[in-house]
Length: 167
Image 1 (cartoon, rainbow, N blue to C red):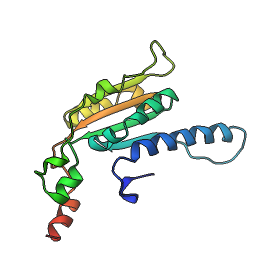
Image 2: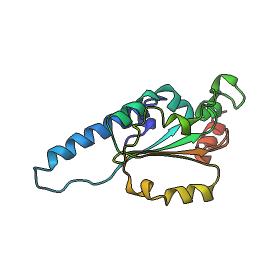
Image 3: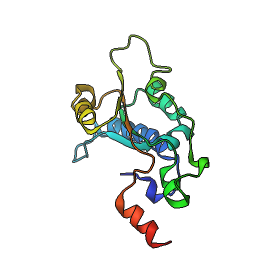
């Protein structure tokens, strides 16, 4: 597991996801000729909208290399961690809204049933649970992105409490 708390670097996770998935693909090629216990799994990334905008080029690299990746894009309309730390109304934490779902299809190979691209937006828990049941998402094949709409101030209680205690 790779997470941004380890690096404290907004925007690095999408590129790290690409690199980790590419490395895993190479490793799986190598292991096919070597017996022994190996992990199984898939690459799943949880990324904020503002971080995604910093490194969106990596989506093109993921698709070009036909990597199997699932992204849950947390769309909270900007830098929520910075809002919690520096003030909820600081406009420098806003980002230009993107059509993230449409952006996933830029550069997608046409008529290639061997590499599927799936993208969907969720606005509530019911929609999220429905999307998690989609066959392509369950299979973990191709490129999938789920845009999860959140409020600007949505952060875990422990983070909010920690910051309140420091004031």
